[in-house]
Length: 338
Image (cartoon, rainbow, N blue to C red; front, top):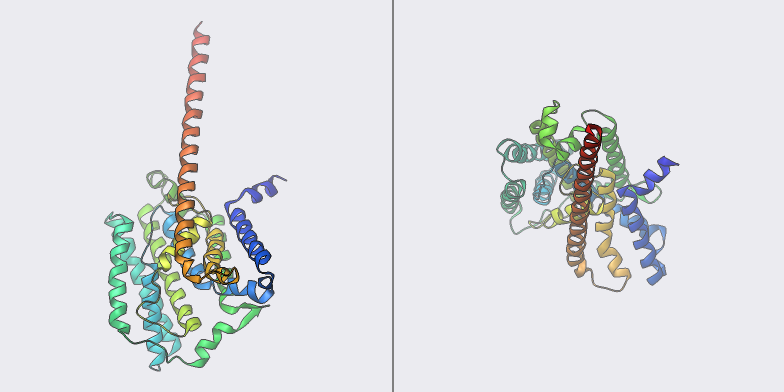
């Protein structure tokens, strides 16, 4: 019974219930939405957001942020798409894309963890550099002459109406969740985010853990770029623009605290589905999908403010509890002396 209560109180469950309620509300407004193809489409279209959100979750776990994920994804999509378009081996193109992700992650990790530059500032600079490199790679043209076989992978299904890409993303997210919660080194990320100084004192390499978090974030963004290239089939100089906000919103909507040390990648994955579904659901509700970014911004601000208020309340309660304990101890000491 206690395990059930713990499960129901989990932040991920709150996010899942919100997603279910969202689908039901749209279904009441427009009953044609509640079909297997429409619901599965919401999940399938979230695969890129899921990978980026899970990657960003690592940076947030250790108490940092990475706003270069969108440009990282876009650059990898442009490079991989160009290579495949020009006849290069798919495996070679994928390897180059992953290598770009590793390099971006190492650079961000070095700047934030080693040089101690605020993560928002450093990754914002990285974002600008990557976006500039993307303009040089693509220019005013598009990468759109991709092989049909490469693009057709995105429409292949594995389980029911769910695509191979989404099923693999879910499997990867679950595997990462178990590594983070069931292994000693996996717990390092949460420990560093909760208290980096305390983690160092008990032998956890905080700097190395933060660098690794950024490398994982970079690699997952690169994988998302490869899948983006296959799913969309067209890469422009603006591809990936704004994805960092979607990923951040997905993380906080999934119950991950921006202060670090709280949350799970499962929650980030659920949040990604919600973020990816907004424009799709707006159409079924009779609104323009142009409201997508505005709604994302409102959701992000609302949840961040709510999280800050809850953390403040928890801090106040802890402070009162410590004060009460000290007062009780002092009273007991005086009574003993008498």
